[in-house]
Length: 306
Image (cartoon, rainbow, N blue to C red; front, side):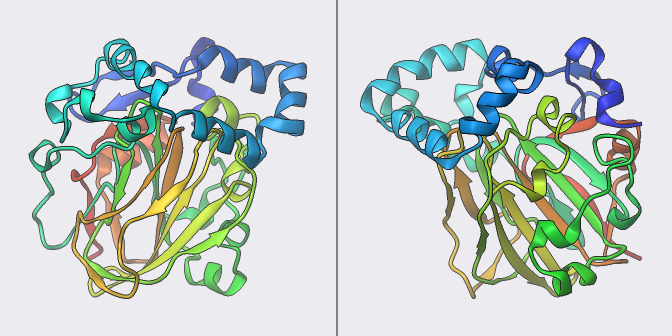
């Protein structure tokens, strides 16, 4: 099954890994999103204007203004965010964007300690694919994942034929810093410019090629246990910026911060070489059934193959 099959009455349903229950996503900006991707006039506006960087950059600047602080408390209340996890008191943020890419207390996201495990790089809704080359129903039936276009490098794409992939989708209500899934040596990031379509499933079922059309930042992570990993941040509508906070060329620890997204929903994609990564069975089962799995940064994704 695909995510398209499980959009019941247009609702996005996912499995919460904490309790195993099937839940319905609360969509930030739902009315506008449905208009843009479901209405002919909306699709025209998307094509002519909304997908372009200037719109997201303008909105990002608005979220940097001091008066945007007024949005913080109502946002916390509406989406029931847990203030006890925040590293700082909400009143200390000088803009909505500062709140949006807030840090959390380390104890709120414990890191799985197993030496041979991979962890989720971010809070979000995740899908796991054991062999991305055989995936012909990526979000919609008959749609395969185009590794060459996604990585912008045909030779690099060959390295991941038969490999596995973790896709982590961050909603605007999520914690928006992203982290390394394992220890290794991180190279300099490579920017691939593109559009800024939404990465919400409502958008993806109408345009499943979004992941290799949107702006991307690709970083190679060389791991002693997991081989060469490709770590890709995917920009989206209203994402003001993708900021890297790590030091390229240096060794990084599992769970160490890599960077953060400014305002907007976005995604992180992690690619593993063939026979390097074994995903936990619940993630594979949920993905095969067309459901994303909600889990938080630091939790285990799977382990070294073999």
